[in-house]
Length: 449
Image (cartoon, rainbow, N blue to C red; front, side, top):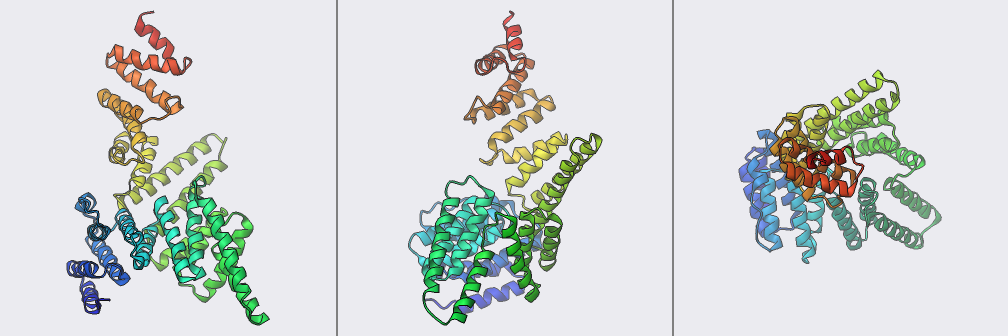
């Protein structure tokens, strides 16, 4: 193994002097020599984040940089880390994690810890990424098989549980958790059968139960209360553990104890004011509070209207803050665009959808919303283009959403005087649903009948 101690010391000194260019250059030289050195990645990411924070902006060139075309996984990883140096956002860090995982899967087993580290850094951003959670949990399971340390199995189950909660219909998450929980039970039985006196076995059993509870997927109030009992015990011994406060907040939130969840997240934020993941959790609590007020005011006329206005204002403020803080994450921009549209801010909504239309996750609906925005501004030709783009991406033309857009497309074509094209769209809609709105009457009038 190459001795990189002098290079690492130089990188640390460069960081202390805020010489980001030298620190990053040194780290990249180290990666060329020893790509599995975890300390290098920690220094590299530290320098990248400090550089971005000091400049208070992220370079557009970083998010627009050309991908490395080499098929060599190692070169792809080096390229990914260079993009992180330019723009250390969640997407670039996730891409670096993907690259590290490829190197690990190619047979370089020492890259396992590097891939886990990079994925954990992305996860700490607070953004949901199903692929990252899936990969990370499986890497922890691999680590468990290598190290024979049940801590990593617990982490694998916990991470996969986060994926299952976010995506209850995930094809593999639930089945994988059951398999891993069965493996954990088997490991505990094997450990319990290794002998030792009664007292030591009892102590081991208590620790095993505690570990199981703390990594448990919370499905009932009883599950949550047992987790909270252990979390509170740990906080008495270490009140400055940010992760414990976050876990406390997440657990309270799981059983809809929003006030307690907020208090825990506030404490975690006090311990680390730069953790934007915690900031977003506090924002989610504010949104849930506002939704609860809407539910409480249901059927109360003006009170319900005001509660809905307040909810929309909270959502707009929260998603705008996220979009400004993480400008390359299109989920924030899409959510902001939808709320701005609901609030009647057509120009603001269109500006967001013009960005999200380039993201495959939001492309189809962004076309739809842009069509609506353009029609409201009387830019009918542009609205027609957007509605056609939406329909070209639709799989189910019998859905209510597709029928609505086809109807709106026909209306725009009709207003533009494009009679034949409007008739074609109306005819298609009549074939699908004869009773849809007034489409049959409109088609009849255009045909002169």
